[in-house]
Amino acid sequence: MEPAAFYVPVGDGSFDSTPATAGPWSAGAQHGGPPSALLARAFERLQPDPGQRLARLTVEILRPIPVERVTVTARVVRAGRRITLLEGSLRAGGEDYLLARGWRIARPQVPTPAAGARAGSPPLPGPSPTPAWEGAYIDGYLRAIEVRMTSGMFAGAGPAAGWFRARIPLVEGEEPSGFQRTAIVADSGSGVSQGVDYRRWLAINVELTLSIQRDPAGEWIHLDSRAVVGAEGTGRADTVLGDTEGEFGRAMQTLLVAPISGRA
View: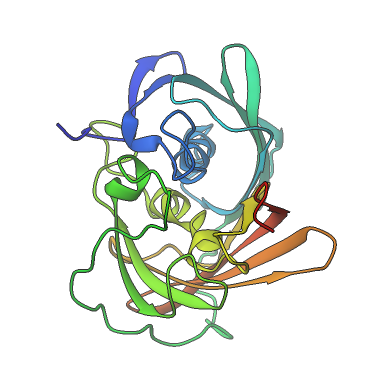
């Protein structure tokens, strides 16, 4: 039976992680998307101000997150009428696994002129198989996400793009916000375009930064990703985030690139 959500709330900021959170590397380690979205949820709910919206989230990934009970904390660092800075953490077993900061920015009394974003996104193609690569664990996050590629090859070395949609909510019994839906899938940017041959090299992100100038429309989010890798083990994945109306934000991930033992 498939989990009804990525997390089940148990009170006091704690959540039981369901098997759907398990990432492609192991059944026991979470994908970075759902826990990042859980921190976004905490930032949106902390002393909420209807005159402000969450516009930026940066998550530092300290170590692989176990598929077990996690606790999320958040606090206001700097409160203001126009901007609010927040920080938080995700813990398991008494240890920090994620650290995060976020900015909430004021909504103006009148709409600001939209400018500079890409217009339109590719049409949504028909259903496609669960995206994966040889050796990937598919019975967790990869099964809980629907992906329809629009260009390139999933997990390939070159640029690629596709539509993403979570099949289940972030928290049981809740409708996720637009920012939460984005965070669930945006950490997959470095999976869409890994920048290296996945059969010989690991490309693992140590952080995720989301900057969103408007909330996405609808469940489907388009990830247009390109990974670049330097000669000293550091890479970067840049992702344009879009919906049916066009570009609404960007994601960036700094990557650790290392040879798979005995294969490079």
